[in-house]
Image (cartoon, rainbow, N blue to C red; front, top):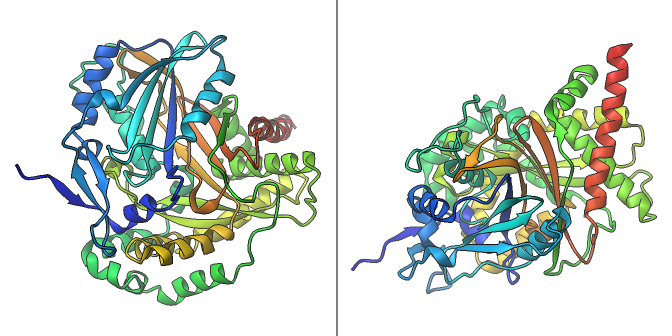
Length: 466
C-alpha cells in the first residue's frame, strides 16, 4: 500500500518550527454553545465535513536529511477518538473556570506523532457548553481556521449533516478588518498572481517576488527599515517566555456601537478597536508603575493575502505589518486619530507582501538561520494583534446554537502578548493570551479594552446629540 504524502510549503514549514522546543504554535478557538451537542451527531459531522480535508488525517514528518522541508504523511493509525475529547468543568462551571481550562490547553503541546489538531467538547459551562478547537499553525492560519469552523457550522439547528452551508451575509473581500483595509493595495493581488506563476523559482530567489511586482526598491527599503529598528521598548510585556499561558476575553461590544464611534469620529472599525487596545495596554502599564511617557510599542499585524473562500485550502497565506501603538497619548480621541494616521500610512505600502516572501525564505533555510531571522523580527515588536470578521448571523453546530466565538493567536517569534478581536452575530469580543510569567492577569487588559471603548462611545454619543 502506497503511503499518501504531500510536500509542506516553505511558509507552513516556517510555522512548524517557529516555537521549538515548546511546540505551542497553536491557534485556539472556542465556541460558546447554548447546550451540549448530541455527541454521535457531532462525531458524524466531523467525519463528513472535517476528515474530508486530508490535512486532518495527516501528520507532519521531518525530512530524513537535514535539508529540505517537512512533508505531510497519512497517519496509518488515525483514530478520530484520539482527537475528540469530552470533559466537564468543575463547579461552578462559570467563565472563570472555562478561561482556566483553556489556559491549560494553550499551555499543552499537541502530539506530533498524530495529526496536529484536537477538539474538546466541554459540559457545564454557564448552563450551556463549549467547543474548543486547537490546530497547529502549520496546518493553517486564522483564515483557514475560520473556514474550518464555518464548514462545521449550520444556519439552522436541524440542518442535515451532509450539507455544508455558507453564512447568508455577504463576506468581506478579506476575513479581517485589517485585511479589508488593505484590499485597495493593487500590489498585493499582483504579487500573489506572480507567486502562483513563478512557484518554486520564487522561493529559491525570494527577491524575485517583489521584483516581479515592480517594487524591489520599496521592498528593500521596508526590510532595511525593520532591520534598523531598535528593539521594542522594555516593558512588563517583554521578557523570556515560559510554557504556562493565560487567556481572557472581554464582554461583548455591540457592533452597532462600534459603528456609532466610526461615524461620529471619522474612522474605521479597525482604528477604533486598535485604539481601545492601545488604551488598555497603557492602563495596564500605569497600574504596574511603568513609565508611559513617550512610550509606543509595536504590534505585528497579520494581513491575509487571499480571498476568504480560499481559506478552506488551508495553509498559511498572510504577510505582516508593524504598527506602533501610541501608548503615550492619554486623550482617547487624539490616540484614536494617531492610530488611524499610522494605519493609513501602512496601507499605502507593500509591507505585507514583502514579509510573506521573507516567511517563504525562512522555510527553506537551515534551522539556525530560520531561528535567527525570526528572533530579529520578534525583538522589534511586543505583541501580535489580529482582527477577524466572522458571520453576521447566529450559527449552529450539531443542533446547538453558537452564542459567541473567540480565538487566540499563538505567541509567535518570542512575542508574549497576543490580542484577537473577533466579530460574530452583531457583536465584537476581544481575547488576550499572555505568558503567565509576564502577565498573569490578562483579564485586566480585556476589561481595559472595554473601558477605553466605552469612553470613545460616550464621546461619540455626545457629539451626535450635540
